[in-house]
Length: 286
Ligand code: AMP
Image 1 (cartoon, protein in one colour):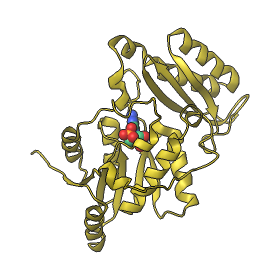
Image 2 (cartoon, helix red, strand yellow):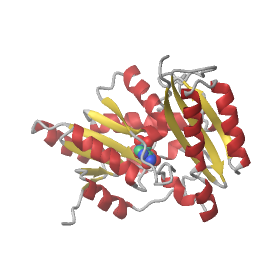
Image 3 (cartoon, rainbow, N blue to C red):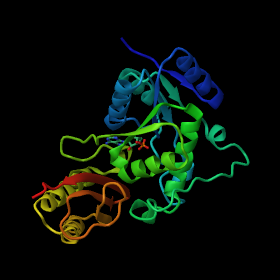
């Protein structure tokens, strides 16, 4: 049977829908997306439906989180296709506001999460995390969910949102969902659609390389040394490397020498496409 999904476009309609569920004693989970729905997003919807009675998925390509030379205009948009996929995956409601609903004339508030946003993607994409924090704060206040689900694919973003919610006492539990990958290891991303066939062939090397860093670290190799080798391998394969970094999994503080718990994070450019990925490191305690 083909399932359909109700779509609301205003905060007022969203609150009416969520309010009715709450009045009926139901719990609500939110899955924020920018659309171009793929199996990674759908895994978050599936996780959300195990954690709450109702799942709201938001679809909003947030202009605030794109830089002036980034792909806001080119970003893939197909709401009808996304709505069908989300309905099939069991989402109960699609919240797809227009930019004027999200940022009405005179909008002038910005949310800035310090510290965690200064390095890695924050260094390469100035203002990006302000845009993310601002829209996520709004989405959480608009929908008032019990839980909100974000992918570990955007690991720094997940930590930024956990900090935002803690610092502003927003009453929601933030939950991370595991990264969904293609069979060859490439993490699913809406931006993979930009890759040429030749680029698509070498793209899985990103995961392969950071996975090798994690294995090396688990075998006691020093963090700087392992990251340097990875950068060299990626550059030799034709990637332009923004960063390959070994960081504390909670604070993103840089780690040096042998590590126990860590996260390996990388961002690269392949032609005109920026790709990010990350893996956990868990070295056995001797
Ligand atoms: P986006 O539409 O790219 O903003 O992503 C919406 C949500 O889906 C974010 O929380 C992402 O971290 C998450 N996500 C994107 N790609 C994946 C993936 N391959 N596996 C799991 N979650 C993902």
